[in-house]
Length: 180
Image (cartoon, rainbow, N blue to C red; front, side, top):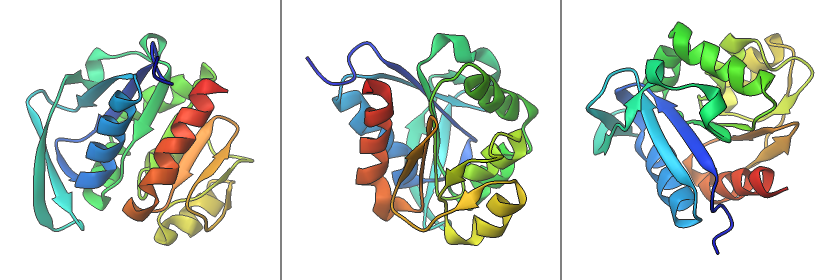
């Protein structure tokens, strides 16, 4: 039996500008560990990823749309980064409401790199400690949270990491909160 058998994880993203490894690696590795992972984007079809926010990456198939999911159907939420993805996602009212719903239900929320911008927009960071891409540290502090510089921060149902180099610790952190 795999560690995450029976767990349902939702990954939300825009259809363009997601950092390739920050969506592909967690999705693949969480599936390998037994989770059912659903990728939801703003529109059906596929997600055009980027490498380093500029070079075209792999295309990722979309399972459903953000407006077609609810927090009640999942055990955890993953928000990948990519500057374009994160900046666009935080302006999507349905995505922000979904983050709030996961937090209000006490379900784990994981965000990497620029992904915490959506958590900031959702107003769910007050009093928490997270990490992110270093350029977000002022935004994180202004949102009422403490920012730390480490590969993964796991606390109070949140799993956060800084960049693609931190993906092994990020995925392990998601598994840890789902099996605790």
